[in-house]
Image (cartoon, rainbow, N blue to C red):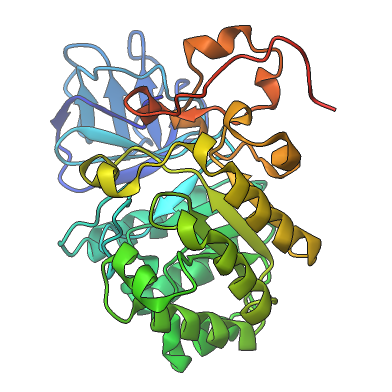
Length: 379
């Protein structure tokens, strides 16, 4: 599924953000023309078209757009000065997120979106501060991701305040490495917002500091993350722990589960996550790859340990055929719709509808144990 398209810009001197419509009579900021220009278009911020040319317009426009089939009425997009049109919010999806920054103070071996060493603060803050008021009030859940979102500093809190104001009933899930919250003033500022619908998803990859630091490629990261978690917990901030499953985390997986229960029993959720073959992962595959079929015993013990002690636990990004049946109840359909696929083997599977499927990148690397179930074994 496309999240961006491109055309030839005209008069686009600054990014234009708005909801799209295919009907000139509808209330929106950006008009997409699929036929002859008709109706009053003067009120639109920008006009988009797949045609090779547009009539001379005294407003920003983009013509010769390569594709628009992925756009729906009411989607929110940004029209950039180079003619690239990025989708910021999809009206028909439950997998919407805001990318606060592409910078990060960690450099994880398996990062699916490697950090970029450039200051994108002004651009992305400007984009999101205009996007948030346009998001429908009935949005059920919205993700915040990066990079490391907290690197926005004061602007991180300004965007959260804006979300809290415009989307009071929306569940907000923010992915962060938690390190910024090691500073008490940072976690205290978040607590002062009383943002009850916000949950922070923080990765913890080992109970042993050196192993965690190696995986995230940042010295001192483990201590900062744990301190950040404690500072947040002191203020009753909702917390989730995330554990990516690969060759570096599997050997101490059960010990990590015990560490979480004994030291972080206040967390609301623990998510075990299958590896995505994207970003840095292909470059570090020898250090990371272990067939999911080969770590079933460790996964069962780690998940059931936490669950038996009352901690809400889930397994993300996993296929039923590579997961021990004993923990099927913990599997979730977690892969974002725009990168979720099934393979040819799955066509004959009788329990396909219950399976979370694959990342699109799995076409390059996946378990050797993928198979179709020929009987319906879902109980």
